[in-house]
Length: 201
Image (cartoon, rainbow, N blue to C red):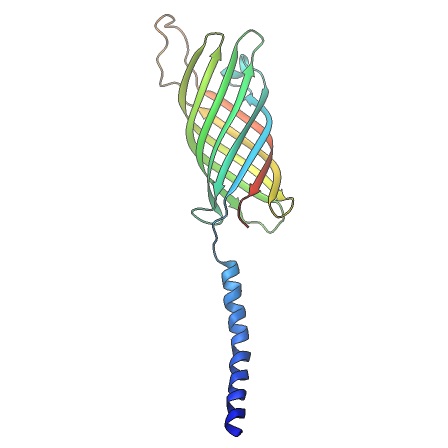
């Protein structure tokens, strides 16, 4: 009987000691890095940057896009892939259609608040199509962006984002039929309402 009591006593001591250890490992598992992808969309005005050459002939219109991002290489530095569509109209018959797509690193600014602030930078390509001349080309771009959002539930975040695209075109030669034509770089920006969905929680 005494032997049984000793075994019982040791059993309860082991259980009591294992509780805080189990709690510690449980907290570690909760706090460790997990893959958390997001997919999102935005919609809003798109415009040439005021004061640039292209702003003299094109007006503000509408744009929209979508993006996919994931917390690699770290929880503060995410990889983002995006594509958008916008068109710009002029006072005449000319229209410009723009489809930029990019890859960027997005840095979440570490602040203790419910609102999440993010800055981005990357590169990509921009497909441009001009009417009524029916001319099109694809140019390299530099992408810079900013975003702030806040959770609207467990799976959804809503916010506002702003994007700037520098479209490099000056590597092109002037057309042979118009050698005095000035090739210029493009400067565009958009501000849009954004919704993104957490695919994993």
